[in-house]
Amino acid sequence: MRTRLISALVAVALAAVVVIFATNHTSGAKHTASASLASPTARAASTGALTVENTAVGRPIPSGFVGLTTEYRGLEAYAGTNPAALDPVFEQLMRNLAPNQSPVLRIGGDSTDWTWWPVPHMAVPGGVKYSLNQTWLQVASALAKSVGGRLILGINFEADSGKVAAAEAQALIGGIGRGQIEALELGNEPELYAAFPWYKLPNGQHVRGRPPTYDYADFIKDFSNISRSIPRDVTLAGPSTGSSVWIPLLGQFLTANRQVRLATLHRYPLKHCTPTTQVTIPEILSSASSTGLAASVAGAVASANAHGIPLRVDEMSAISCGGVAGVSDSFATALWSLDALFAMARVGVDGVNVQTAPGSFNELFGITEANGTWQASVHPAYYGLMMFAKAAPPGARFLKLSGAPGADVNAWATRGTDGAVRVVLINDSTAHARTVTVRLPPLSGPAALARLQASSARATQGVTFAGLSFGSETSTGLLAGQSSLTPVTPSAGGYIITLPAASAALLTVVAGAK
Image (cartoon, rainbow, N blue to C red; front, side, top):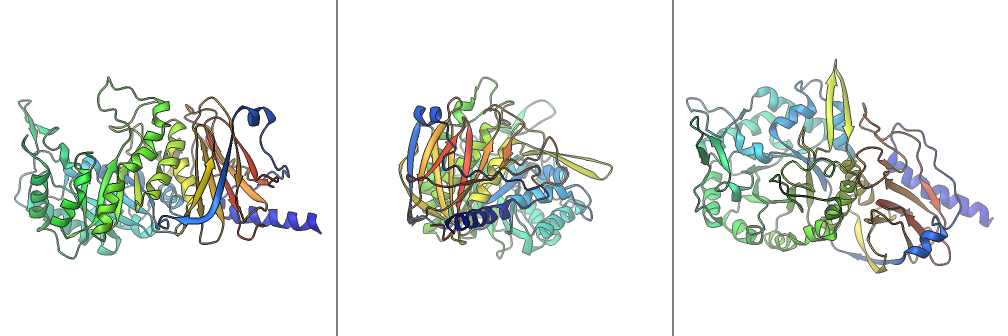
């Protein structure tokens, strides 16, 4: 009877986890009854012990927490130019990050201030490189409706024209529909307007969007003036800044601009905006790039909460300015994105939009189309986002952790609305395996383990999640292959989990597993 009971509990635990991996793959979970997945050598070399306590901390994970951000030109590069025949692979890749939710897509970035809706009898502003049209609006509207998504749309602010902002806002609202628009976001990183050229004159002279003396007070006044051109019943987002100097001043901005009902910030732990800047994989995997990055916005979260509005980091990636070949597209970014998303959620951020710019090194996936057939090559960082979406479903609460998981190991735990406890372990060591004993009182029954791994932290291909992969290309946007979800039966001390170098694992224990 005891053997049958254990087998039944294992089946229940696996069934609960398999649901979240339900795609068009062949299920083939390994049925290993071993209580320990660690080799004696690995266990002796480096061990840790972690207790997941039965105490919820922090806020529940909001719906639509994981989203994407792309440029205005990027929309049609990913979704296509025919609103009646959108790219189904891109649609599925969006859904994967917000299963059974309303995904949030931010369209803007640098192209926010390079884009406009043509104003009759008005010359094209000097910095504008792209003009919106009806086809673009129809594609955006069709995509939002198809995936049940919400759009954050950038409005040209660097042109410093209420007429330009009003025309673009009216076109976006009328062409896409208010129901699909989460917010209109004025400008993009205005702290850089006085430092970087907006455009260049025929004689080679650089023209900046604001004078050298432009500061935060000037920006607040600008925002107040331009925002009067936007319909009052439309939610505005801002300040869309990534400045470590401006971010702590968020409260001043929100006090002066009551129409802003969504605070937006940008965060990159590492910068590569000059050829001499070197960025390494160990830097990506350092705690400063994940928990340290989240700590940099904790004060802004408190300011937004004090004003009763949500805060979204609506542009984030590991490395700024397009990234670095062999680093931004490495498996290390999968581990970073997983850890960074947990860290952002833990400090109270309401959502994160991860950047994917077509053709850049930090692109999450590359989309191609030939004769009506769409394909996507999915890059490593995307797998980390997807694992987070599985480990932190909407409404899940963080659980308090105690103990020490060991050197280079980061740990997170949540309890979902389904009662299941999900524990994520991330081994940031690129050279050494780690072993962690996880205790989950009062739960002690069979669990299921899914691994996120590749051949090394530097790998740019061959990533798997629970044994599944998008392969070199996917025409469905769904994970495929043979599942390697593994049943884990605890020993007297707890669940003993081995983490190969540069890998992560998701342990799921269903409610009632005692």
